[in-house]
Every structure is written in C-alpha cells, then in structure tokens.
Image (cartoon, rainbow, N blue to C red; front, side, top):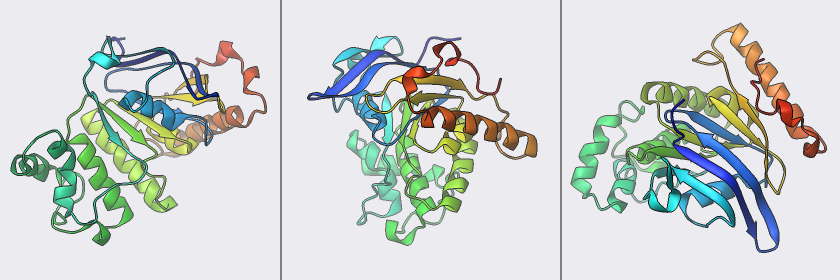
Length: 265
C-alpha cells in the first residue's frame, strides 16, 4: 500500500474545558473514499475544521503527503452541509467562485468550468439562478464548484443531509459513479449509516463525545453498490453491524481486537 495521502496521529481537541476529540488516528490513501461516521455532536465537523485550518490541534499531529499539514498549503476542497450557492449569481458564476477566490479571472474560470456542466447533469442551466434548480441539481452545482478547484483531496460534510430521501438516494448513486470515473481522494462526514456503506472503501466509526475511533471497517463490496440482491444483502448486514456498534450503551466495551477487521467477514 502506498503512503497515506492524509494521516491523523493521536489527534485531540477541546473547546475550553469540553473535550471533543480524543486520540484520533486514521489514514486516507490516494484515490480512496473514506467516511467518518458517528452520532450527532460527536465531533465529526470539528475534525473537518482541524483539516481546513479553522482551528488547530491540542495534541497529536496531522500530515498530508508525508508533510505536516501546516506545510502542505491548502490541499483540501471543502463542500459544506448546505450548497451555499449565492442566490444573486447564476449557476455558472456560482461554480467558478472557488477558482475566483484563488485569484483566477472570471473568464478563465468559466472556460475551466463550462466543459464539466454536461458531466454534472447541469447542461442548459448555466444561466439559471439557484432558486430555479431542484435540490439535487443545486448539490451537483456545489460539488462541481468544489472539484473544479483541482485540489488533492475532497472534504464532504454531510452534503446530502438536507435532501429528501429519494433525491438523496439518487445523489448517492450519482456520486458513486462520479467517484468511480475520477477516483477522487475523498473524506465524507455523515451520520447516515447506509450512505457511508454505499459510498465508502473504509469507514471510521466514532464514539459519542469525546470522540475516539471505536471501529475501522473495510467495505469489501463490489461496485456499483446495491444493484443486485446479493450485494444489497451484504450491505444490509454491514449496516446492521455498524448500528449495533453505534447503539451499544458503553462504547468502551468495543472489542479492540475486532475493531480493525472487515465487516464483511
């Protein structure tokens, strides 16, 4: 296995006297899709704030491509929970925003973004405003704005959480297909077990706050996921196993000897 693209080593963080993250260790390999799964309030979004530099660790270290994160520049493209599209900008100019913030001129940014509209299912909607698009289309526009920045790694913070169940399922399948094509290195934060199993190569399960890694699960399922009865049955078994971990009254009793095995075994 190649060296990790991202490595967290015994990372800890507290808000004042409130411990939020405790001894978090995890890795993401190049081209891998990894999910962080845990209960609400467990510190998943705090972890992303550490990666994006909004806050700094109290303990431990974060490395990117073998360098301390502070020396890695800005390696992440971040997609927040809401699409965060600006209502007064047309969709084309919303998708160029990340490039413009980096100092790229609007004309050049448009030239880079425009060829991707068809691939993202947005062809013909370049001149529309966000209010004229469905929720799923808005999320695709937000993801286009994220990936066109061409950063080494994507951070996805519950990107489909605000969508209805049917639209969400469709977006998960679409994102899986896009990932298969582009092989982005990606980390997803979610509290949706099914979403994590559907999209991920590996899942880190966090305990309630203060969050620590209580399981690391390899999702050894064929892709595309959920297209046949056998795969759906295996996925359902993995989901049930993860839910059992999350609902266990005392996560300190998780069997560490089994915590790094494949859930499909």
